[in-house]
Image 1: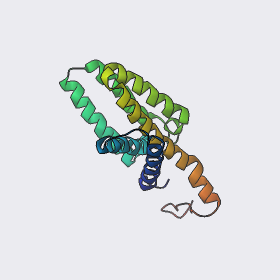
Image 2: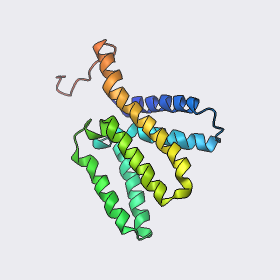
Image 3: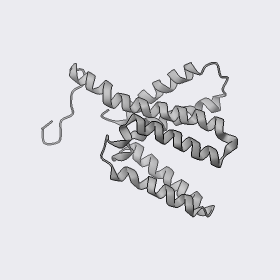
Image 4: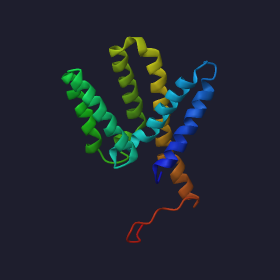
Length: 166
């Protein structure tokens, strides 16, 4: 996708579809908004490996988490998260963070780890993780399937670079 807006729209559609599938659950407006924020974050997440809004939000969140960990004197977690914070800078764009297996693995491992730290929140974290993963998978689908198909049909044209080459 040429910009973040398409991914936000795609993530919103994915959110609405998953919410429709889960319509048997009676959820509050607050929970529905929380799930929307998770899908929104997921829709921007795969682009943290390039200069993007997703990367900007990711590093602001990391800064807040780092400050909280310093205040709580959890330097062990700070060290582990520091490695994860540097990882997006070391991989090429549309590399690791645009792989379905990696997103699925990352979300599942994160859910297991955070659920172990906060066992009372295991169920809400499961749904948050599910919506995050849905948003991230919508991003990958848009990048890998939708946009190339629209370009092949000449519905979407390639952007020209500043010097006129494609």
